[in-house]
Image (cartoon, rainbow, N blue to C red; front, side):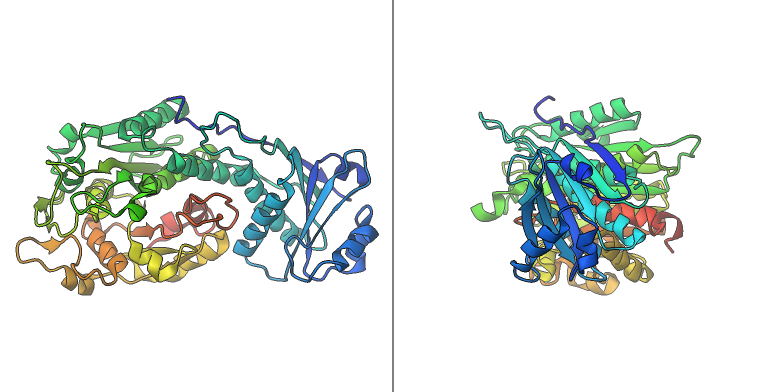
Length: 502
């Protein structure tokens, strides 16, 4: 367990309200200074050694990032790394600036990092500082590393300087902790995070945090008729596959969940009998990021002690080759009795999710969110900067897109429905697993998954095309982004989606 358990302790955050003075700047090793796009002299007049900063900025090209760097003439020789934001900068732009400034500031030995926004009204200042803080907390987290020489020291503490009013950082910290967990699990080598180790880590977290926990192993899933999940799992050389259910029930909340989180947890995806080529298999230890995002979101909700009842379902397996692995043209019966003609064994994610969605939706939660690195088709449609969203409530499209804009984890909606299921008509089963042609596979995959939502429960499927992006994305500096934790928390806290889905 020690090899796979992340260090999720909170970083120390201090706040210094009021005027930005020389002492507050000297209290940090590096200061991230955020200014308006064309700061006036009056903005620099509010800063110690502001005239020097203004002179240095004039020597830099407009719109450069950083806008300038300089050092204060103090005992600590505080490094100032400045950036600018245009009026009306989006949350994504603010988060991205935060990531870029943190990277520039911590290229030297980091220590205590300061964040200061000057020249904005109080509300804008709080939002900007909060978004840059999110970037700092992402950068401060140590990702898995197994080198003999340890990585350089990370940020030790963060100081928020010059705020007009105290900033409530509880949500920012909880979301960071959930995102850090998701990224950590995704980056773990697959020989360390196998399906058993993953399930045991989740069980340990449940015990530590007071979550209800149940692990459905293959012997438990067979009587439940979960043939789709078991078809994928049968190629494993051991009996490690399972579906794990967690429950968070604050106070006297009833058994029925307000929200159910479902995650694809394919620990390693070879493609199965339809084996992937090398370049497409290399990073397939990350094919469980959907489950990591579901678990990270569940953790963030628990950290904040939100007054909502939440279930979390993790479909944990590998997709292996071998004499017992499922094959093209197998006919599989899922937990809801629907039969599936297998076409391509590398479309295993929708098989593993199908039964998990049946189990989750049978409990009639207020809404189901599922997360999966499901299709290359979604990446081709959106690149790795956006993720795709699909829902059985078309009226939610505008709200889901708006949540992406507010959170800085941007999404784009796609249609689903019976008309697309015509492309999955089968001569031998209720429908095919996927189309031989592969056109619009992200839409067909989501339409397929919709067949496994029981009781017409409101449902949102997130195809995580932004799950990994070279160089990071938004506030996150790592290739694996943990995309979805911040998005879902915004759907809960800013849009109240679990209460108002139609």
